Image 1 (cartoon, rainbow, N blue to C red):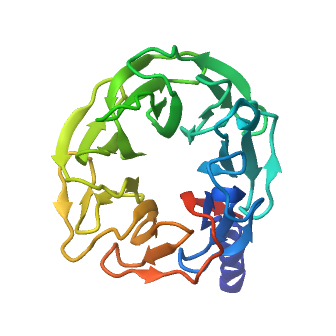
Image 2 (cartoon, rainbow, N blue to C red):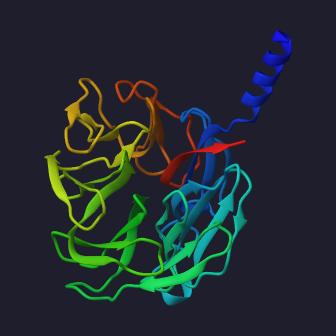
Image 3 (cartoon, rainbow, N blue to C red):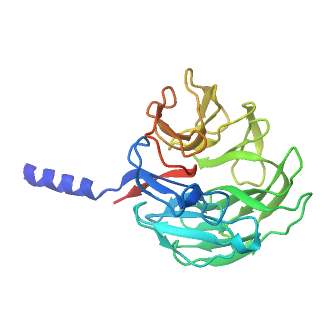
Length: 319
């Protein structure tokens, strides 16, 4: 009986999902890692890609799938976008034909929402395979070049940020939607952000100009929590705490309100993904990657990769 129970336990464990990290970037770069250090299954469409049709910009995970989005260029002819779906980060299926760049993409536990159904329209899907055009925002405000940039989802809301002002200090717009089909609120006078994340029932972001950390439960109202300082390296949620910082320091918070500095830790580049004590950072062009296994106290460079910078990464389960 003991041997049988042991066999059943091992069998059950073998069926559980194991986390990997999947990263995407310029030239259609896609790659996977089990530790954030060594990268495998590296594929791309174009060597040394730019801000063009081949650029993959964002990635999320949900319903057992990874969803990567991107595309776009500076002319109407090169504005086409991508939605790619994969169950393992290795083999990718293109979904749909998109006339505009698709970015970002978010998942709230039930539904995927992306921007890209036209210049300022949203897309939504319940399975990552079939997408519908949703609501659109009006191109109002002081600027003209509307580009969606970043997003996060949770508490039955998707919050998408973009920029529309070419003057300085740069301003973002902040779009709040519950489902991608209707818009709950648009704020056209939002500060430009360096990153955003959701965890423990809270949205947290860090602004690009001054490194101000803001939090919200719903994206409708925001509270300033901390001034990190210039050149923030983004923000991520590692499963239990938020992490933000710059090249000189790293701070953590469980609720986004109270922050503590982790002595000796720092972020040597843009924080792309975090899970427990494993942090992954992009250290500039072209595609240089670093990882830390101790929460940012020590960092190791990944083996050299071919050119093409990395835009986004995410931990997610595969079976």
